[in-house]
Length: 239
Image 1 (cartoon, rainbow, N blue to C red):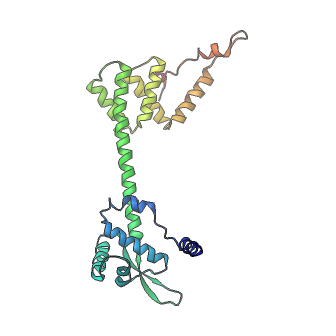
Image 2 (image 1 turned 90 degrees about the vertical axis):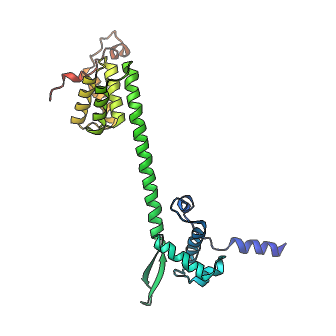
Image 3 (image 1 turned 120 degrees about the vertical axis):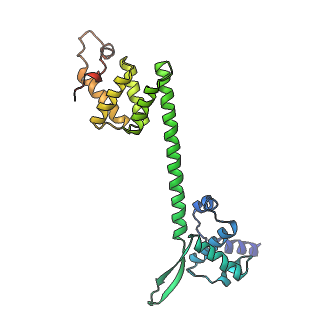
């Protein structure tokens, strides 16, 4: 029993090798084979032991490949740009070579950024599609070609985010002035005033309500008074 506990303790006290989880998630998408991935893991393990340039013989001792096969795989990893050989200077001033894994981490980060941009583009297209459906729902009919082109111009030429156009539509609905001319004026005024977020729109509404809310008579409740607050008529704006 004591011998078994000693073996378990000896196992637990061994140094661990830290492997980024992103490596396991993305190496297949980078076109790295399983054999090449295992070789990269061995390089990381050697690095953790401060052996930055292990010879093929040392790698072959840990893997089911010959030295020639290891050399060929290392050359492929170098050609694919997943690793590179760099130089360093030790404490005695001697120049030495080492395998650098930074190209691999850069490729993984590039893949993550591309995936994120693709997701954002997909989300943008989805929001734009929902925007056209929302306009048809509020107007109670199919949009005309000119109206579809107007929304497209708001998105592509004026660069209004879909969420801002939705808020302008909401503003027109609440004001009882459902027309493209009125919505276009709202968007024009918001852009002129540099209003670009939902928070800024809500702040604008609060300021307008505050400045245009009539004082309630002594015998009138605040709730009844708030019901009489007028909506802002954006068509009355002057440039």
